[in-house]
Image (cartoon, rainbow, N blue to C red):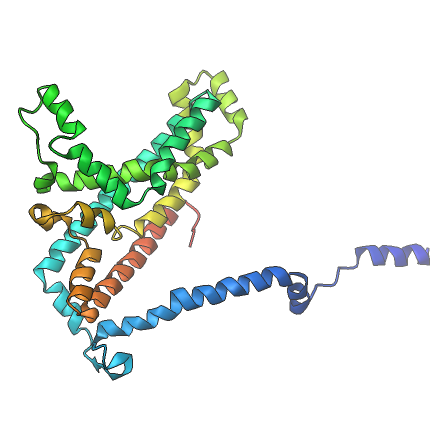
Amino acid sequence: MAGKSASAVAVIAPRQEKTFWQKIKEQKVLVLWALIFFVFGFIFYYLPLGGWVIGFQDYKPKNGLFGSQFIGFDKFIQLFSDVTFLRTLRNTLCMGVLNLAFCFVTAIAFAILLNEVKSNGGKKMVQTISYLPHFLSWIIVTGILHDMLSGSGIVNEILVGLHILDQPLNFFAYPQLFWGIVVFANIWKETGWNAIIYLAAITAIDPSLYEAAQIDGAGRWSRIKAVTLPGIRPIIMIQLLMNVGNVLNAGFEVQYLLGNGLVQSVSQTIDIYVLKWGISQGDYAIGTAAGIFKSVVSIILIVAANQIAKRSGEERLF
């Protein structure tokens, strides 16, 4: 009996916890790789943040960071007193919101519709064609847009041929059309690529849910509404939170390449403003101040979106 009791005690005895250094030793390869990425991120992401001090200085390259005069928030006051910057902020915010709304929705819709295609060959072909524009540079994309929308381009030929227009239209001469052109360019270039993550999420949905819904008499659209959308809702929320922080990153290349003097009032973004005034004019402090403003607004938007998601019942992601 004593032997049995001893063996029973030995069986139920709690296993000794491994020490911190023992766990590190067991996973030394993973720790080494993590350390490499930590050092990389520190050097290239966090160390350059020390340059933000330029936004609070009357920075002169010859004097450097430690020799330039500290002026506090004077550059920020100058920034928000500049009518050009305020107009640039409006353009950036409007184009950012439009890109977020249309590109976000079209990627989800495209993924759902592509998932409904029954032919695997046709699905793969459409998917491949749709995300190929992502790998094109904006130089090529804007060149294609210029050719399409030029006076002798295919769009004008179709509109004139259908008698919708009496004569070719210069699309890049009308400020009211510029934002729509930018949104169309982003949708055409990025929809297929952005849809990949939603397609992956859809494939993870249990097929038995579709079968059960079909047995209950649900049609195709009802199955999408009752099964597909709820199944990818967590991914939608994550993507939304990530994209909200990029609202002020409305773009640089497409606006810079498509813009001209006729649409300058609606084409300039904060990035173009930084290039024009912060780099070309040599006022590095004003450019840094604009960059700090973008970063602070992005952080505020992400935190606010996270709180809204949390209140709506979603799990907190950050």
